[in-house]
Length: 250
Image (cartoon, rainbow, N blue to C red; front, side, top):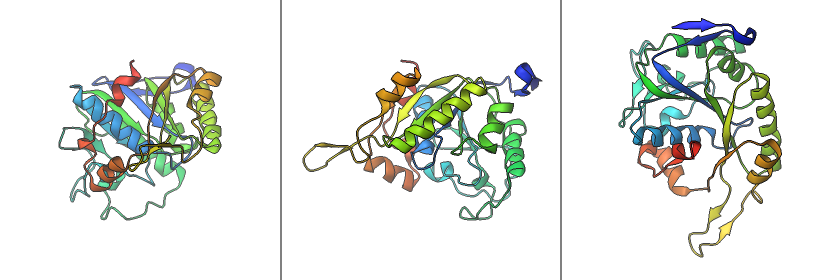
């Protein structure tokens, strides 16, 4: 482990982790955690060694998507592995019960994220995906300050409000010198199961508008998918058919 202070920001390096990609949304409710999970699952299927650091300390949902429960006696120094071998660390795995609230102020949240990065024995990973909490406050700032990110994936939905906060997240990434790998517009449309009509539940897609205005690449436009929701609720997201990771490099 090493550190540097380039641009006045101290970065803590983990040489055994080759690439680190954060996934952020600017606001909640756009499916940021499910996109993080899909990226990890698709990268794992490509043969890479993959992990997920759940930095959404007060609203963690990654463990449930993978069917992971609170681990009795887990001291927090080793991640939990899924059926595909994805290594996951989340505060929800360390709580007495998965529905216990985390009522913490910013410094304690930031300290926990730092511990997850510096003290967890991740082993050798090709990709570590970081599920950021929504917004541009303490937790995302901690990640961007101390972890040498290879890039940021932004998740949005078609609503004008979501697009507005995406622009905030992009400006934050620019201020922190974090490269933006691209945009995923989630919940963009619904295919009617009866007539196969494409229904734009949240209004017309804004993805191309945003990418044109910002110059950020468009990674993918994802539909509302009942099957994905069921897999997430059942803890079986690793069974979902996805190639999202490939599209970052397309």
